[in-house]
Image 1 (tube, protein in one colour):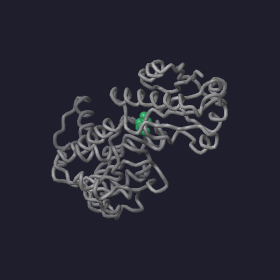
Image 2: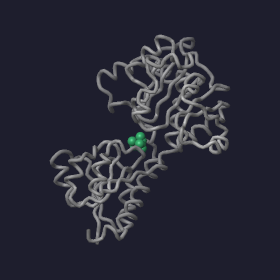
Image 3: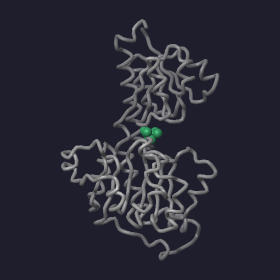
Image 4: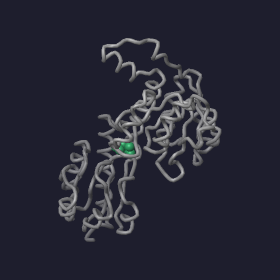
Length: 313
Ligand code: MLT
C-alpha cells in the first residue's frame, strides 16, 4: 500500500526528502484552513505540523484516512490528543531534535537579561549612549534554579556550570543518581523559589505549572530573582510580571513564549516593561534544530506507516 502525507506548517525541506527516500508521497501546503483543510485532508494518511496548525477534533474527524499526526518539535499542545486517541490516530513528536537549540537560547537569554544587552542595543541603535543605566550583574557564583531536569534542563545545567553557576533543580521525576551525575542539588519547589538568583523553567504548561510564579506567591521568591521562560507561556503569570518587578520581587524577566502567540494587544502592553526582554518563540528556530526535527518526524512516520497494522485498514 502506498501512503500519502501532507505537510501543513513551515517544516524544513528535509522532511519531504526523507519521506520521498522512504517511498511516501508527500505534499506541502501551508495555506489551508477551515473547509479547505477539511476537504484536502481526507485522502492523506499522515499530516505533519509545527505549532501553527491547530489539529482539532474537527480536523481529525475530516481526516477519514488519517493514521498519524506528526509534530516536528516537542510540544503537542496544538493537537487534540484525546480526540486522536479515540479515533486510533497516532500522535508523534520529536523530543530530541530541539534540545540543544532551546538550551542555547535559554543560556543566551540568561546572559542577555543580566547584562541588559537588548535594552543597551536599542539605546545605541537609537543614537544614544548610557553606560550607567545598563549596569548589569554577573552570573558567576550565583544560583540557577531549574524547574524540570529533563533533556533541556540538563543541557542548560551543563552549559551554565561552565559560567560557574550553582545549579539547583525541582523535578519530582528526576532521580538522585541523575542529579548527582549532573552535579545538581534536587530541592522542593518552595526552596528553589526562595534560594535561586535565576529561575528557568523547562516543563510543559499544565494545571500544576500554570502560574508557578505570580503575585500570590511573590513572598516565596528570593528578592531580586531573574525569571526566564523558554518553555511555555503562562508558567509565570504574565499579567503579574510588571508589578512583581516594580515592587522589587523580581529583577528582570526573559520570555521566549507567551500564553497567546503572537501576543494580544494587552500582552504587548505588558511586554513594554523595560525590565522584560522578549524573543518571538525562537527556542527551536535554528537551521540545525529544524533540520533534525524534520528528518526525525519523517523517519518516525515512515516507520510507523510501514508497520503491518496500517495495511489495508
Ligand atoms: C517545541 O515544542 O518543539 C518548541 O516550542 C518549538 C516549536 O514550537 O517549534
